[in-house]
Length: 112
Image (cartoon, rainbow, N blue to C red; front, top):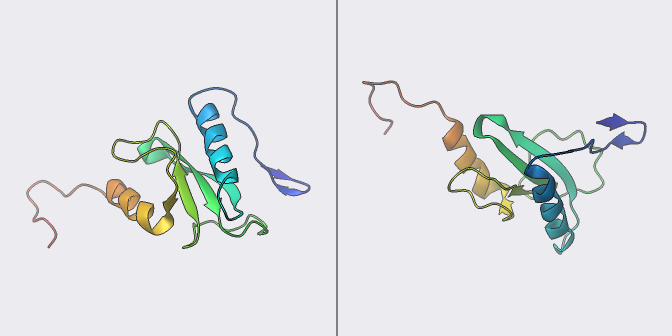
């Protein structure tokens, strides 16, 4: 949520993502580089990810993950995506994009 001092995390009050977010934040604190934590929601996959933005001093207006950012899927994560593992953006975004792509129409040729 936007506060007079800039963007600030609002709150969770129940559900599996409370402890998963806390765990991921503790993991992030142990990384060698400093990051600005954000939450990235992928509603189509019922997925919430801790987005570790590589520029901790930014004003929070960046809307897409950058190449130096990390994404940490929170548990429960979709099948085939390991929760609480920091993924470079270049490794996880293609997986998410493939899963979000519409399925081919019945009777149409598969892409080459």
